[in-house]
Length: 117
Image (cartoon, rainbow, N blue to C red; front, side, top):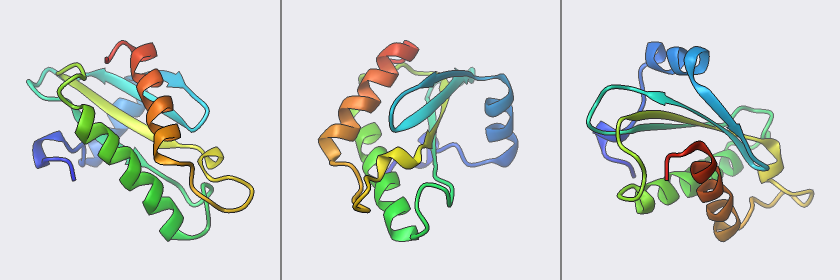
């Protein structure tokens, strides 16, 4: 679990990020980011009902993404708000969530492309 100071929770902050943030598209998700002027970066993971109808599957994808962020946090740039919007492609045709290593590879690539890593 991410520390409280690393969570982007307020609706007004998320809305500002969605309006003003830059975007990087990848296979499993869209990463929106912008500078926040704080000493720490804040993250949020968004999964809609379109990803999968079962909350269990959506939450598994969110947990995996949060864990990847937590483990790589010391390598990531400080002072950003980051939203990761999960795509339905993260769940395959058989209804299985993508493997942890696959998600990690995509997320690290997205952070590199965004200049956050």
